[in-house]
Image (cartoon, rainbow, N blue to C red):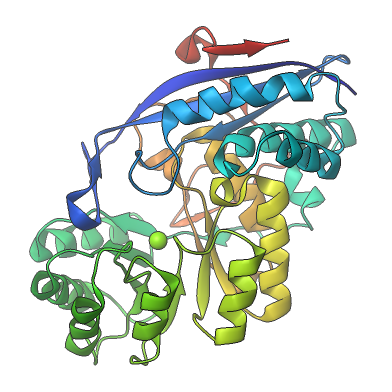
Length: 367
Ligand code: MG
């Protein structure tokens, strides 16, 4: 089943809350997302999505997704869309690095493989664990009392896991964590995600300042070594995210006992093929995971759902429903949150159909 055309569409995703704020004063008002379409000579068509969290979160930016696909696509025309391992080798040979560029193409080819096989991507990734899986809600960085109010409101919508965006002024972050902890109920889980925002002395103060709070500490500092230094002086459960971008990082983390949970973002690893490899490695090593992406709409949410739902339940710390944060739906058939939980589609492939009336004309079109 040969690839005959690869196209990329740009779609804007505004936020229900108006903006999303995290460490270091970073924020996004409207996400710039790319929908990737892969067509084949047998008429089967697959879709993927890549949406960086602005250009200042990971080494990825929205226009780079499209520029990269324009560069890479000519190498893929004529290749078999269902041979995911070979396709990934070919993409890596044609373009060094830039995993986020490859992610949407890889996801689209999993969509094709699922349709050809007549099974959901979830089945191809290992099988469905239970009826549904657990989600977290990211709480945008605002003053402590406002974050506590937002947690209460999202708790009423069914969420039981909350990821606070901290990584700001340490005194205020300590107040944020305490204010939110006070409105939680037994069984809820709280994560303080600094998104690399603290220097080591600041992180050290925060972990001491919240010593008696039941809270996970996520990616306090920029580098792996700085995070490890904080890990070694706190007994809070510990999560690493931004610095975990491949198998080498995961193996080092395991060897150093550097975290209890890791965050697997699909586009950070380069698509479902490599995110699945990372997921399976974590299961073998006994490391729990948050499974998600940098951001996205309905197509990304569908891809996340298939990977999360095929992860053994006890290893899935949390996942996410990005399509409920944004005001624009870019595809039909995407999974929807019910009581803080979600499930992958049972249709063949990803189970989504992009809304081309919203996507308009492609910005990249290679055939
Ligand atoms: Mg994180």
